[in-house]
Every structure is written in structure tokens, then in C-alpha cells.
Length: 298
Image 1 (cartoon, one colour):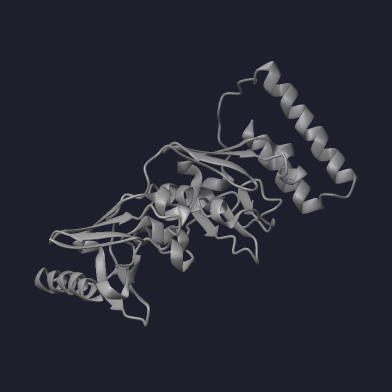
Image 2: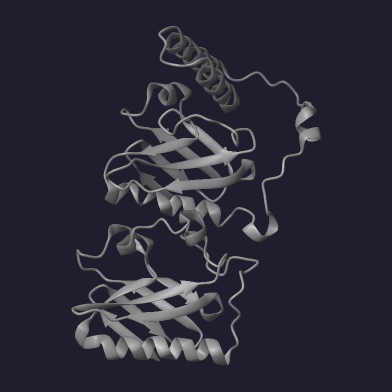
């Protein structure tokens, strides 16, 4: 067993798995503490390196492309302190860090672990259900559906559409950009119908606009990762494919009248949208897009 215990966290390697446990100190970012312990199988690792510095060093692990839904969802945009595959090491423990890194590298060599991209996720991502309250609303995922409940501070366009519920089967991609504190971020759920939408995140009823607490908004990456882990692996789709012929055929389904209360809610939301459009809040494109989203929701 090769192990290093630091205030920033613990790495333990038993020859087949690197178990990463975040530290409990207040200096450890909320995202890493919330994401929790990660068991990284050796076959998911591309390499590991210890970077010594004058006062502290860093252990960094590189994973094979396509091995981890977290890295796939965040696209390398996690702030450095929130990266779970990075460990801050005190200078007096540099020798131990070098030993752990060397043991992992030796096992990679002995087991002949390839560096090529994987064809399936080798890590599971966070467990579900998962729910995060952000600056723009609360986003939840139960493994089959995404639900967004807008905050009182959300744009009127979004609040007019009501809660957004999206089935995993309707999704083709999740886009995530962190709130840096200097520039807003977003979490967008892309469906086949909204793939070419030009709406900005603050008006897109399929996106959360991240503009508040950077510490809390970062937790939306948990939902992005959990959803990404349940979408087709990137290796199975080089690009989003659209079945134009299928899209051109109307779906013949039995017309079931919605309950009366749903009908009232629908009419109220359509009236609100009409008022926003007449007041010049919504452009022609925004009005058409939001109206379609409301109708799909019912």
C-alpha cells in the first residue's frame, strides 16, 4: 500500500485502485468535499506526476480521455483547487509524494495500461438523486429526469415557462461553464429540438445562468456529471446526428386532454409570454422559442 495523508486529502494506492479522499479542512473547496471519495481504477489512469515547489508541491493525476464523466462534463474547466485529481503536498512530505507517484507509474508500466482514449466510462460519477441550488434556480436529477425550478431572481422569460422537466432520452449533450466570479457561467441541457438555439443562458429555459456564489454554483458540475454519465459515451458518437426524415414525420399519438388545472396554468403562462412580447422584453425569436418550450412542457 502506497499512501499519503495531507490536510488537502488522502491518496491510497493498493496496486489496482487509487482511492482519493478529500480533506475536511476549510481550505478544501466545497466541490471536492461534496463530490466525496473517488475510487480510480488503474486502467483509467494515463499518468501521474509530482510537481515540487519551494513551500509546497502538487501530486497530479492524468486520466485517459473518456474515462471519467466528470472530466467529460467539465471539459477541463474546473478551477485548479477544485480538481479532485490534484493534491497539495507539504514540503516535508515530498519524498512520500514521489514514492506514491512512482508506485503508480510502475504499476501502469507492469500492467501495460494503454494511454489511448477509452470506449466507456471507467468511473461512475456522483450517485443519484442529486440536487443543487444555484443562483438561477434548483436543478435536480434522479437518474431519468432533469428538473429545473426557477428562482425568484430568474429572468421573467424562464419563470413564465414554469418548472422545466427533461427526460434523459431527449438529451444529446450537457454544456457547463463555471462562474469565475468575473464572468457568468451556465449549465445548459441540449436536446435535439434546442441544439441550434441562440438564446443566451439568462433567457434559455433549458439553461441555468450561473452568476451568484462561485462556491455554490460550482456544485452544478455534480448534476452535469451525473447526467453525462448516463448519456452515450463520446466514442459512440463523433457528432450529433439528426434524423431529418423522422423529424419530418408527425408523431401520431392519441389526443388526451390535459387536466383542467394544467389547462389554466398553460393559458396563464401563454398570457404572460404575450405580455412580455408586447412590452418588448422578448424578441420574435425569443417569444417563439419560449412559447414552444411552454407547449412542450404540457
